[in-house]
Length: 272
Ligand code: PEP
Ligand code: MN
Image (tube, rainbow, N blue to C red):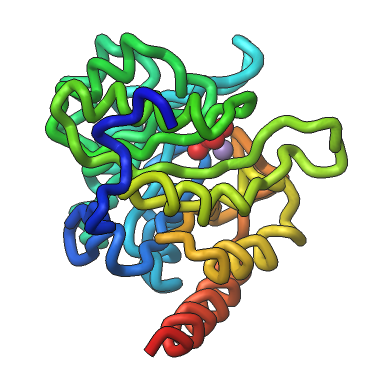
């Protein structure tokens, strides 16, 4: 692919790994889970405990929410980041949280272990340049209307600024299908691995928007070679202030991660 320099897989097929806390993305299978939004201290703490209990490796939660309507819950901002900090202190789970404004990058870095760039901001080039200057790993979601070439060029923007630590995340794209929230493109996983050295994770929560489809898509992602999963979990999904329809209860999460980790072991055993 033209113009891809830094993200390109080299002839030695060396793949990037990123060590965060106890896990190394690109080597270990990493499960990032947590609520769509940080809503309160109680909700976040309880969900964080559930993530830990269910073998999650990192806690996700949005403090800045890019909502379709300006009247919808926009996130708690700094207060939300402070709650995430407390959840990290309590559970030891590293924090993954979204940043939506270039002016916030430097101070959000004080709270985040991984900065998430959401689908709606994938091609926000000033934001990409700013996170490219930061020292934090970046979880770069695929834009909902983006081709693989466009996505990889966005990763290239970040690397070109000097930040080598980019994790790609497939979260579904818009197609003519309306039964699912998005169409989860799992064939992108091996395609990304053919072209780049970057790790790739899958987000079946936004990718399907449907509870019943999350488990099969988690398992299919493992089989297709994903480096990890990003899953929305909420202590009480019905009451969630965003994405109430797709957040798993802790029990649903435990049952899925148990199967995911078993399948991962089996898949690895095929290569040995
Ligand atoms: C999210 O992870 O909460 C989110 C808003 O995801 P996306 O950018 O993929 O829609
Ligand atoms: Mn969400």
